[in-house]
Amino acid sequence: MPGIPPQGAGALKLIWSTALGCVLLATAAWGQSPEWPRSLASLGYEVYQVSAGDTVENIAARFGISPEQVRNLNALPGGAQVSPGQSLAVMRSRPAEAETAVDAGDRSLREFDPQYGSVLFASPILSQCPPAAGAVHFQPAAGSSVIVTCEQGCHFGVVMIDGSTGWISKSAVRMTGEAIPPAQLETMLRGGRPDIVQYALQYVGTPYRYGGALPDNVDCSLLVQTVFSARGISLPRTAAEQFEVGQPVESPNLMPGDRLYFISSTGRINHTGIYMGAGQFVHASARRGCVTTDALAESTYWRRFAGARRS
Image 1 (tube, rainbow, N blue to C red):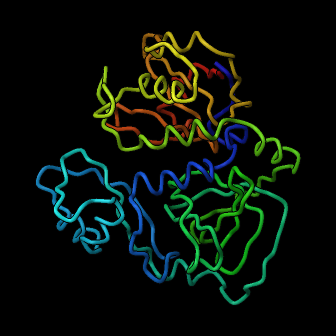
Image 2: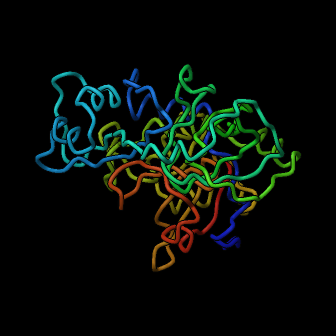
Image 3: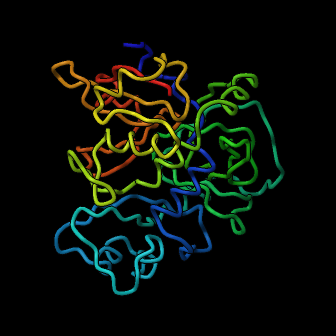
């Protein structure tokens, strides 16, 4: 198996998703025109799995937000009901002191050499700084990697895969001190297939079912086959068959759009996903019950990682 340790997996920490995929996930998975409060930096997000007996109203009450915010965030019509197993994005307030602990007095822009930062908790990446006028690019999960190149006031500037700058609250990021040579960053921005990642992300939240049939449900290999077919690339139906197709890719050279494959306890290829960058991949997960994103370095996946293929 291609070898890099899960800890300090710098080669896996390519770039956080894509600006293209970010916008798509924010609109497709969470809905459009959410009711943004004044202080975006004091909010986080999490994905909530609906349980039996849940309603929009009691979910909103549980998280201290309004039912309208839940409906707007997830593009739910006014009278729509939720179903057990459905995934909903919900806002969660962060303690005010987390943001005020950062010195907000200096609003000047300070640039520095690119370096990795680790996301501590879910916090939106915004298109502008200050955030009041900015749209939401993406909502990275805790543990995700970002590339930080500057700071302004209470926000770090992070690089999106199209080369633009997004803005995330300083309180949500721990700087690792791991620098990135400018030439390496340029290579990361040029490479990969962000269009494949973008297309795959539209299926986030789709229920998992072995032997699934879109659009109602999907399994891991059908997701990969469908996404690549939409980009004119024909793949077999099963993960084991797909593993035999394409150019092998060593883990230090992974790029967005590469296909990832995993083995079962018996050594058989039985799972697949699509690499997004930043050590993250999108896949139809039986464990989570839907299409979702996870970290490749997570032990559940890393110990089963068999290799990658590039089409």
